[in-house]
Image (cartoon, rainbow, N blue to C red; front, top):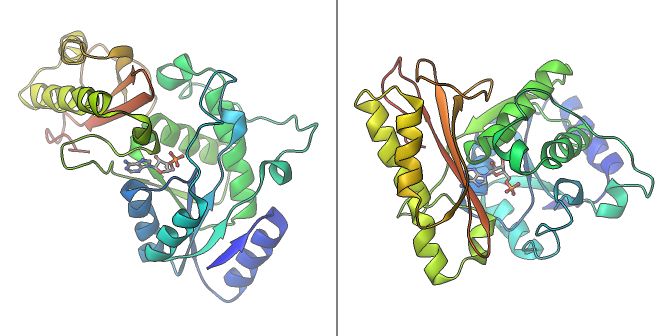
Length: 286
Ligand code: AMP
């Protein structure tokens, strides 16, 4: 495994690979890796000559009251997991090399970043868009892989790449779940047994709502209230039914939609979602 800690060396390596005719697939992560991350890495390794992952807990996407300091950091184990998934190089910059003391540049992606997590975490997407831009400038990849787990983040990155003519192609991968349905997340390790049991109501409510839509329900309010009802055991941050591309709320399910939820448990904020396409009728089970 080759580990790079600065953008210049990382970029030089990518250029050398490209000169040798190799394609590069890239998976940005914040570490504390699990099967969800590994599914992205396997796709990157399978769809390109070389797979690169980054591990960087990005301070600029956390608000002061959020969990930046306690975010799990398991670097050695992460590197071994990257290798097992076919990654050949890891980009692991330090916050100091990423952010000069007078760093002052952010990337604002309008429209799709509003509402949902953008509503609850107003600082979040400008930090994500800026760090992903910086990562794309270091890891010059042909394809970059993101999870539907963070569906709004995918929409923001796709919009940014399109609007700013970035050369990389974005690939969105399905949500990997635990056997009982809980969407895998690095933050699941914050949960105690009692919270872990209650956290199941997110995926359970989403799948029940998917069933409702598959059986023909098209009224957004009816679908959302069924989800809210199913999530009574947790404090709801949001339950939203939005157009899957624009992230704007819909009143009726007439185009591909994203049903997205966020909940606050005592020790973690969790998000989950499903997509549903009324045209194909079959909703994705992700
Ligand atoms: P993170 O380390 O949480 O920033 O996530 C890095 C990437 O892994 C993002 O593109 C996430 O959407 C993706 N990811 C996280 N959890 C999952 C999951 N359960 N299934 C699929 N992808 C995931």
